[in-house]
Image (tube, rainbow, N blue to C red):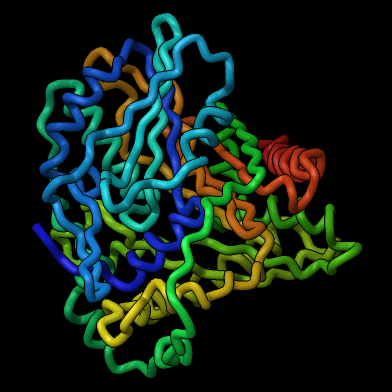
Length: 422
């Protein structure tokens, strides 16, 4: 297999060698899983998932391709007798670049704890999104349990705009391109290789038990709002209380949106980067209740996901840099987008993983945990087996750790206050 990299992929491969554009899952398993057993399972998954089978190649005329010929071996690191937390080990595994010209686009860590194992999986965001990570983990645990994974084979790794339903493609193709999609960048020099830079990242985590999770869901239902909106409102209020008096009470939330509903049916359960981004400024002034803030989030989210608006921006980020002599040199001129939001909230909802697979029982799963670059702050969560689990990652150079802890603590205080009478 050999295909050209889409411009969005090439962009993330290039900048992923400057700073981490990655995400992770940390899974605690009841049972012993060693590197040899994991490698055998991964060998079987090669025929299904692009990040396990491929790497990039660059031609002399600056054309980049993805191929499955000559891909490198799996990186599986073991952490024996290591007292560091899973958060610290995940950060270490995200602290160095993927060799995209060697591959593959995923790496692993294992830490054995008597009768338990912690499995850490780090994905390159150019080839997968949070939903893809769950699809991959489901296939991995099915193979470990001696089952055959269900669903289509995603080895070809089609990109979002390559797999859209015809009726969606027809509508979007008629829309006017945004300015950034028509602007031609002038290449002023050659590509510059910069050292990989990892921000001073910190990860906080939190778990809500089954009873608390059920109360939270019931609270959102009683308010006639989504859990996503309710969570977003609590975190926005925590930010407003922390920073509002100084920088204003209009705060902004970013929410990744899964666009699989727009792709052909046969690709919806495959691995790929099928998400887009929505940003929403929200009035979080003290006079407004959490419910009012949540209702505004829900209303704006509904409007921004109607009429294909959520997939439109990503659709225009299509193409292959065919008309650019040296894409990497051009990208050296790019500057980071301005950080115009407080945090990103990536909620996978109820994930499609069983409580156990054969002899392995999944005790907890945290993620997706996205690397926070250029000052980002990212909240990731999922609900598995009735438990809702959160991670919060940020750059400690943006604000001190005690500020991050204060925001984190306050958000959950607000949530628990809401459900106290439920």
